[in-house]
Amino acid sequence: MSPSPAPISRAAVWVSRTLDALLLGLCALLVVLSHYSFMLYCENFGCLGKGLLWMLWMPWAVLATVGWLVALVVRAWQRRRGLGTRASGLAFALVSVMGAGHLLFWLVTTVLR
Image (cartoon, rainbow, N blue to C red; front, side, top):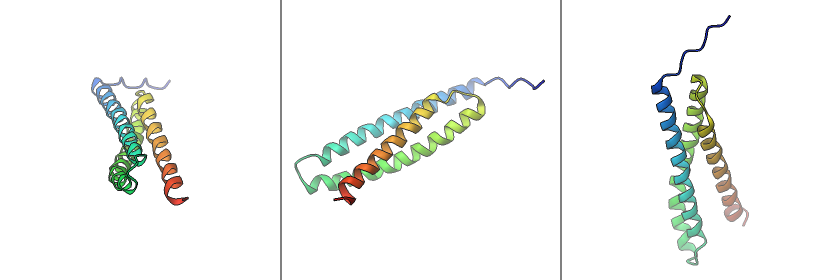
């Protein structure tokens, strides 16, 4: 007979929920930055909007990369501890989809022109 798993501590649950909330908040921030950068690109100012766009995309890319890595690590930690991974998995998927969407948009508008 295998020993029963150790009970999950309250501190681990609190840390897990806090990290989940921060990851989902980061996803919301990335959505807002994406919306704002796409609105700048679609304005009628021509090249002026593109310069502002690059100033928004660089922080977006850094935040998205850090968020993606943190979500990956948090999800692995939660699995190892026996905690729920639904929110961290959702954050990982959202950042992955947004990153792929940005890459596709960049390819279509910049490289394939």
